Length: 466
Ligand code: ADP
Ligand code: ASP
Ligand code: MG
Image 1 (cartoon, helix red, strand yellow):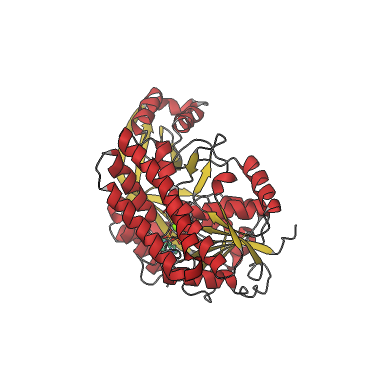
Image 2 (cartoon, protein in one colour):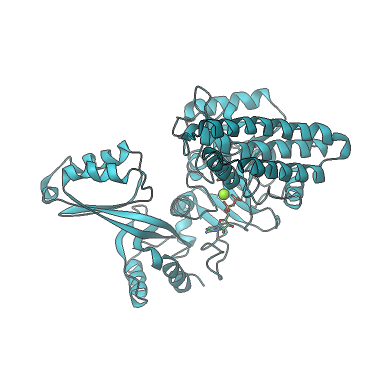
């Protein structure tokens, strides 16, 4: 289906983090956009219908701190709140004309009054339930979206504030809620049919059917942008951040890392899932379902080409390098289950997975052998219950402080690649276990000791990406 000529853009915390950064955002939102790439898939020229924003940098962490301090009845939360309000007001004052300032300031004041009430409640009750926690942290995005709405309107760019709670419907898994796409997609379409102005949308948050505020997991604003883009059938989803695209490895860790100009959804999905913070792990799925290209671009260097993530891994494969990019995720926990039954038992695997499912703990790698299975998880919240549940099937042992390294690329599964990779690591004294190759040939993942993860990344980067 031909995509309509509009797009959804998202600006992260650093891009919203200061007066100077917001000036950049304004110029990207207001200027005619970059020309589309020759294949016409980038959507660069499309009109923006929604701008999804993260909280200003550091604000979510501050709100978490405020909530926690208040729950211990430590009165210093008041000072922290005042400081947060001052930061938003000072930024607003620098950006909004004097004649509109009083009105805009009142929007921020009002939002802080609600936030204050909630935090005071936490202090009075000395209770911070996951539900209240999500409600408090949701204010980071409410504030930044209000701020940008005020600033854009002041600059003559007509727009409206949209609290995503109105349209993104989730379950009540507070902290990392699951989206009900059926309802959400209908809500978003309906809302945008009735509201034709540019929408400035709170990233990261949603609400349950009975309107309890939820969050989508840390870094979840990328996911919000993909949810809106997919529901609206946008021509492109643009993730504007503080680096010039998806790099061959985290540029903060690996000096020689380079931007990867193009990635397949499958490759980007694996990278995000296994730790590349530049994209929230769930971002790719809605875009992939609708085949909407996702572009990762730099707010501070808007003319850099960035990375375009597109459909068609199979087709891209022949053009791709053996290894396109590397990442790691840490810490992870390895659980080994030993059972002589394994050899000739049918329903065992289903039973084992059911235990993890019951505690909503996702498994990253599974390796089976004749007498057992080993699995990795990164969330240890329900580890005790899981181990208890697994004991029904055999002897359980647990190893902590591990990491998963993941390499993606067009031919990581070609003959000899894995062998060479592990030889190189072995020579550097890095033992490797639990190796897993995606059936699609998009990635190799394996487990190393947590303390070896960074070294493994650097060694492989030097070997495969120059
Ligand atoms: P935002 O606030 O814009 O969402 P994030 O901090 O969440 O930004 O993500 C951007 C950061 O992700 C970069 O500054 C970079 O350090 C980190 N990162 C990790 N892995 C990669 C990678 N492979 N490519 C690019 N950036 C990466
Ligand atoms: N503000 C949220 C966070 O810090 C969401 C995001 O930045 O995407 O996790
Ligand atoms: Mg992010």
